[in-house]
Image (cartoon, rainbow, N blue to C red; front, side, top):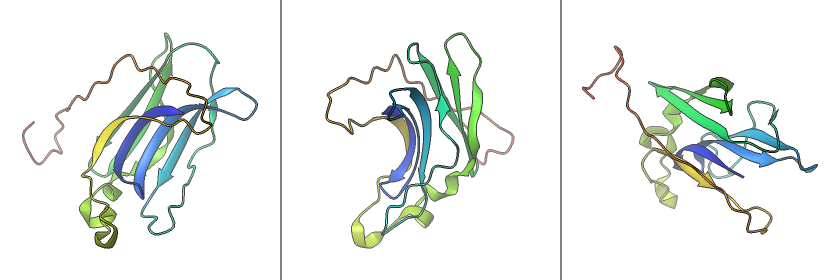
Length: 142
């Protein structure tokens, strides 16, 4: 599976991944781990979305204050939301830090890929863009 993540630590993250169901059908899967130390419990806050087995998929996310929303688009289509609005405040020292286990990484957004079956299948990304967007609710200048 491969996709887009908003990450603080192994216990505090959000991940929208392109993966495949056990029957081989490609799908989008939204995973969250919210303040789950020490158990590392994964949640799936939305049902998987089946997508065509071929073609490019665009993934995006928006964070505004504590609100995080993922989006996706199939080739030739506009972005649409996937899953609920999530609480991005867990991607902070106040919520995500676990001193005893040294989990601090700082919050970031990035691409991720996992070879869960050991098949050495590649994850191809065409590009990654981080674009700050000014908003009237911002406390600081961008």
